Picture 1 (cartoon, rainbow, N blue to C red):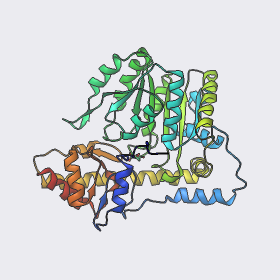
Picture 2: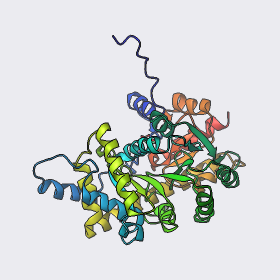
Picture 3: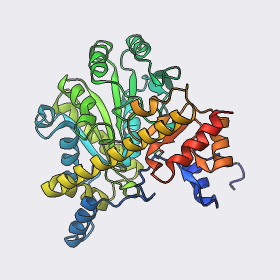
Length: 398
Ligand code: LMR
């Protein structure tokens, strides 16, 4: 019956993580998947999240289905987190927010919505982008192309080329952008560069679709929401998928949202209705538990304060790993420029290593990074950073 079904080639991120788990070598180092590990190499259970979870379980009653769009307290907490509690767009009722299944689920619901109502619009992805972006949008029937983004020569951004490209796009083109902590490069737009994009988005009638999966890992929880707040302040229409996987270390609970900022409340109500329809025919309604834990953290002042401090600790630990890796590599290979480790933000850095060099890192040294050269800096710790730098230096030296 299923002879015609092709074997799955695997996913560049998840399959490599599985290969790491099976690797019997004691000194192996996992810098592949985008997961934050603490200095002991463990996925943290954040104390704020733990306390919220106990409080949620304490009062948990029967489990009816959630509405298609998710729990109201979760949805309003997401809006306040992304835009600031008093944002006029929230007060005007012009933001339609659903509780998603992680940020990926939000991307999928958004992709379906856009395919139905913008059937002739192409999707433009940064070059490069998260490996799964193209798969999600193509899976909803979109045609995807790329816009200039990363500059391998400098380890920075090709902003002029990106701006010129946006200026030449057909109206109603959909531009997928990372709100902060670009995955896979760690290269972000500055606030001035976001501001410079605003007139282009407005004049060309572009529709941005922001992905905010790493809020708090760049410069801070509010700072990392600069882009959605700016676009909303400017009265632009856009979509934003956001995630709590990383910021609350709740990967397996699949907590996230999709918000569509609309010109007015009437359009927002219709967009919300169609998102409910997309959800109903995909998975009916989201799960309850994780979203309630997130809402508890976000809306309980003492837990919120704890959480913000915990996110700051994670962010600062990543920054200190960036500095250590940079310093060891700079000492081992003087003359080479590793400053990109210091300027790139968030969990990831684009190391510039080729696929062959990444393969050597894995087979010869047990250090796992993606074939694209992406390294998850959040997998480094004080015990493995030296070994990682040594392995990288050996591979780079040829
Ligand atoms: C990553 O980029 O490694 C993470 O976002 C995990 C994933 O699902 O790909």
